Image (cartoon, rainbow, N blue to C red; front, side, top):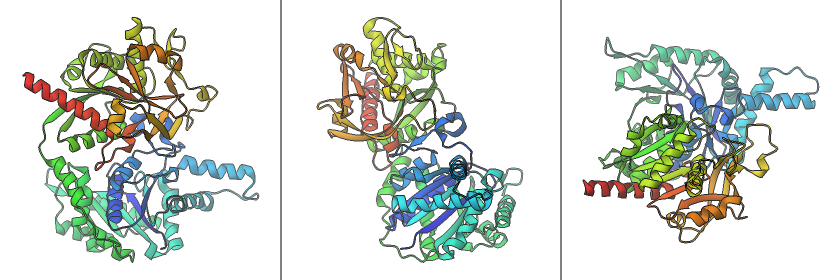
Length: 541
């Protein structure tokens, strides 16, 4: 079939929920038997978010092929249960870099390079790459930001041109907007939506559907008003009220008839009857009251929870599968160094140290790891969380605070964590780490092997430093088990402490492969240990 395209734009305010909406629509289409892919167009000039602070942009989500992408790609993968590729995240930086490179190479034969047609053509070329790379029959394309942003204009112009290129039957525009609530009068207002649609139409794009987001119920009269003033079919005005359970959004859209409307509008026949039974059980489990367990997430970006979005989701997935509600205590590691925040760590049934970069708060994380080891508290370390487990354990074995990572102390006498050999000559920061999917062999009888029930797994990486093999024997003799090793034997992927209820850490990022209906095995094993500790504490009380 001819590839169909659905384009998502945003109005009124940013962070209105375009990513979740696109992911939910993708799930509707997958349930009807179609091969779906989603692409995010980010208007910033960075080549990718890999060099951006998590405070600026939330977590960096890593794909199988090593692409460092926007966190919205995590929404897409989790909701639709697909694996995306690097063509699915495009930035202004990538577009301009490609065009300028071609100009320097002489590909334009001396012509004047302009936003139209050269930049817009490159944007359209990259949109067209998605179906070729993924085999998708329907491609969903989300533009970051809000209509009216200067940096978004070339992307919107490219989308305007694509209707002529593709034809009306193969393209559909969904505008996701916000209805502000005026507390003094108790009213929802449609005027900002009308203005944003007018702005979009001035560019040459008339939306086929408007998703009206709100924190308050949207009555039918309001939807009719939006349809009238924005020149959209009444059934194409979708009231989407904020739900405390994000995974409920596909069910809400299904109940509103959006899946059937999309089929009709794009001239498609569903290949199968949607089966939402498993998804409904998932949502029911989220809503069901469950006993609480507490996990202390000890990080340096905890003020912005989106910096650890996939970790939070993976904990929730495991909790749902095991019938517990995982309550996260967000612990700022630098505060632990000052003696503050320990009450949250001590009240937790498990400790998790996620990935991160830079020396701020590192000693606080090490102190939290030492507490978990000495008190028998279940511990899960991710990337930096594994490296610091090695540092803490080496300090314990050697009776010294000297062991360290050369990331934080280049002159340390005991560099138990060191820069990977193939990273030593690299000068550029962006896109140069060990990135993407790599194999890992599991040691029989280890906790990791018990969790996975496999001998070989593939996991996504994002790091420059690794366990220094010169210290493997010291650590192993002291009770550290290297339960996951790269097939060439060079890289320790998983480390465990043998005489501990559960102390396991990974060099990779398992959170990126967790799904709501298929929790990651290591998160399941961790939360099971957390649940047992919580149960033991209740018995003791």
